[in-house]
Length: 147
Image (cartoon, rainbow, N blue to C red; front, top):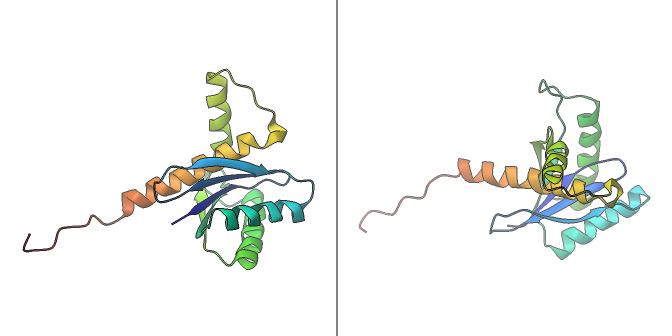
């Protein structure tokens, strides 16, 4: 199973990939000037990585309610579901970009926000959260009787 993680933004869309190994890695962000070109970049990643499912960060308010930003993501998710025909999972992304920025500060690394690298690292965190949550909720296989 191949997954594409997405950290949506109006100007930059962070992307990450994970496969059956279960480790999310950042991909080049979709940073083109137009929405059409950003969606084309996502389409190329879906084809190249043979994506089966998409995991999109869902920016809930700090109190857990759905606000304006989450509603914008809902519109984006509707567009990608229609365009790509793949299942899309919403994952709470509160503070994912902030966590990436804090980690970079601790490492004394400075990234150009416009590069999309922070967004793609946030997408990797979102995707990794999804993979770990899925693994924790997976049924434990028991050996068949007569072993």
